[in-house]
Amino acid sequence: MVNARIVGTGSYVPEGIITNADLEKLVDTTDEWITSRTGIKERRRTPATEATSDLGYRAAQRALEAAGLKSSELDVIIFCTITPDTHCPSAAAWLQGKLGAMQAVSFDVNAACSGFLFGLNVAEQFLKAGTARYVLVVAGETMTRATDYDDRSSCILWGDGAGAVVMTSTIGNNGHSRILSTHLHTDGTHADMLQYPGGGSAVSPISHETVDKKRHFIRMEGPESFKLAVRLFSEVCTEALTANGKTVEDVRWLVPHQANGRILQMVARQINFPLDKVYMTIQKYGNISSATVPIALDEAVRDGSIKTGDLVLLAAFGGGLTWGSSLIRW
Ligand code: UT7
Image (tube, rainbow, N blue to C red; front, side, top):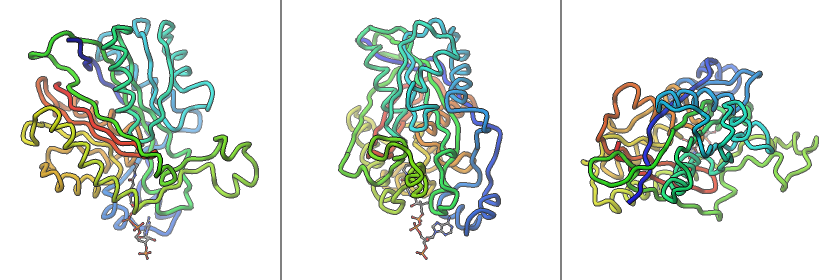
């Protein structure tokens, strides 16, 4: 049986830091409120001279290096993002040009904060079908470009960065690192809960009116999406464990989308998952939408937290609504 496996990880966050003290100068908020309600202390900001594919480029270079692969060996590049450099061409096309990966079929996947898991699953299909040997999955976001710094309920959340994995196929099950399962879900009846409408056909062409109405910024029904996130995160983690006949005790690390530290605490409580086995980056990077999972994954690999043979559970929830999980034997 053919399976997909991850053979290299990489990540990159820009150097510019937005602290809670910086936000106190912009909106009516406090470090105490942000820390206690979200767990966030800092987030990163991309310099004006760079775009999402530039962040993705650095993350991809690191993942390729870890995999011992040249970009010319890639067959497919999947870029997961809701903040591409341009609506057209895709962030993947910009990235492919920068990498010089001329053989690689390249396209974007948009599943908001769950994007990386959706991209991972698309990559799995290429590998299992035998139509690709090496696939690069990148998730990168410049969320600070989509942030309304007058809206105190959301500007405190978002940051920038990118993560990447190189994947290939593997034959057989015993003792091999591989993706055991991926479960994905979408519920478009709640599509209005988290929106980034500017430039889309529903509000085009961009006009003074759309700008005055701030349609070029992200809008979120925070408390409602918070409740759904806790429920659906918990459900999809349980779904992954049940499908594989595993328990919470079997899992070494839960590497979740980092939307809000309190969401993660509540999910851990709901599924009886020890909080010290939840890999957290929210305090230093905030919410980077699709990129939080691969960034946390890369940091956990590089700092030695994730070791060969560990069972790692990835989970995400985001706009769409979208949510999903992936259980990986590392
Ligand atoms: O990644 C994709 C998925 N994302 C999510 O699922 C995000 C989920 N939502 C959240 O993380 C939280 O809902 C927020 C961080 C957005 C908001 O936190 P909350 O604990 O749900 O606060 P709230 O919106 O219920 O507001 C509570 C109070 C309100 O004041 P009143 O009406 O009680 O007087 C807000 O006006 O806190 C106020 N508030 C703030 N106060 C100080 C809202 N934002 C701030 C702020 N500083 N930055």
